[in-house]
Image (cartoon, rainbow, N blue to C red):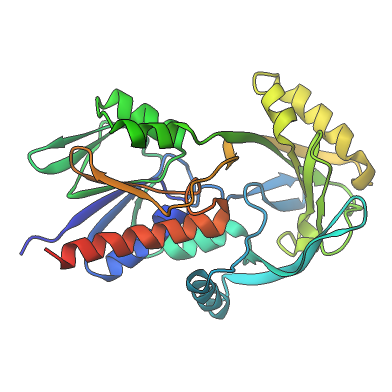
Length: 334
């Protein structure tokens, strides 16, 4: 009997969760990701200056686990040592606490570590950017910039929806009008994320995270107080959506200068080196309530990710789990 194959486009949490479940059930799964590192917005990096080495979570800062299904996974990850509780609630610049009493989780030693843990037994191809897919001879043909072509009986696309829609257009795949309208209607906020390696400890208060007004900066995190950067003083600074949208086409150095100046009250130190990253599709303003969309367009394809199930990290994970469950049920029903 032929082994059922699945190609997953996007190695963020949604794609990884679906891949783990499907592979455990005996399906042949390939995850294609355009990035150098796996994890999507579970993203971490290091910056070095002399003997100082800072580690930064420069994508998602933490995640919550409030759905029982996701919470069960998180408890397993804690036992495996790849997730821990960072805090219960986080302060704001006005002194109030957001999410008070709610456990905020992080990867251990950093957020990308969770993605690497999930991907360890999977077939993951990094730096493989998909440029088109076609349904041919009852199988999906997934074409990549590298010239590689991957085949799958089922296709799962977890990229941000604007990128997904662009792929569909290039691939000459026309969705039903209602589904096209649903996907097109999701609007994303951009976000500049600035990693700063400092000479001295930052002034960000314990436990290391600080919500700001969002007019210029929305968030700051001290990597040292967070517990992910033992060998360097690091701060992650994330801009608000309006600032990020306004400066999308600006010079990188100008954005770094503006964000660093705005963060100065909480730095308390000279900056040794820095790195700026733009998350063009950082957060959906109006995420969809359903966990995924599925159809034969013209072969079986799922659309999922953090635009589904209410958004956020937890939503992306639940989207991936729901996709896997639906696909397995459809196979069981013949």
